[in-house]
Length: 119
Image (cartoon, rainbow, N blue to C red):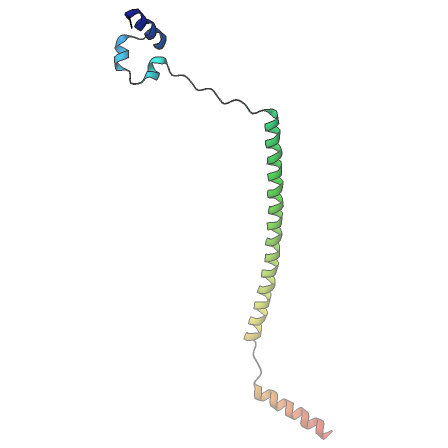
């Protein structure tokens, strides 16, 4: 390669206004050529947007139906819990209530039979 060819190649690669001292200090070729901002990806087509909107609406509807089912189950479980709590309370009251002495019951039963036999 000749000197003129090298100069042409350098002029193509290096941005104008770059000093030779900067060439020695630069760390990457991208600094010499200038940092280019990457282009944004292309926007989706209308069909894709509409499809995604429809898919989103479908997912929302499914989530709402699942939420309703979960709420129904929650209310059912709450009702069952209340019933069980009432049962427990009734059983506790029965246990705490004074029970008549079994011998007293037998005595009363015998007295009632004796009275009925007399009559």
